[in-house]
Each structure stands twice: as structure tokens, then as C-alpha cells.
Image (cartoon, rainbow, N blue to C red):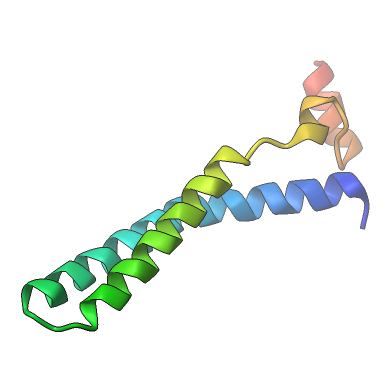
Length: 85
């Protein structure tokens, strides 16, 4: 796999993971808060998992930039032609 294709694959994975990860982390965290409110100690585990997932989504958002695409290197020739026009 070429370096450009690998970078595009990673960027597309991050584009999927960021919103879905934030949504799922909100669900898990709210479930944990409900369990803590109901005096169930397992709720803290849900909160920790939700916050960890949220942190990973924000890290993916911060590192979303594809350096090869910004430098003008594309995985496919058609993408380069579209950019030039």
C-alpha cells in the first residue's frame, strides 16, 4: 500500500470515528451518571470508559490533518487533476 493511500485510509477512518465516538461516549457517560445517581458503583466504570472514548475522539480530531494531501501528494491521479482545475 502506498503512503498516500495509507494516509487517506487513516483520514477516512478518523472522519468516521470522531462523530460516532463522541456520540457513543455521550451515551456511555450518561448511563454511568444515571447509575451513580442510583447509587450503583459500576456507574463509575461507565463514566471512565465514556471519558476515555471522548478523549480519544478529541485526539483524533486534533490529529485529523493529512500532511501528504496538504503537500499536494494524492493517492489517485484523478484527485490531482481535480485539484489543478
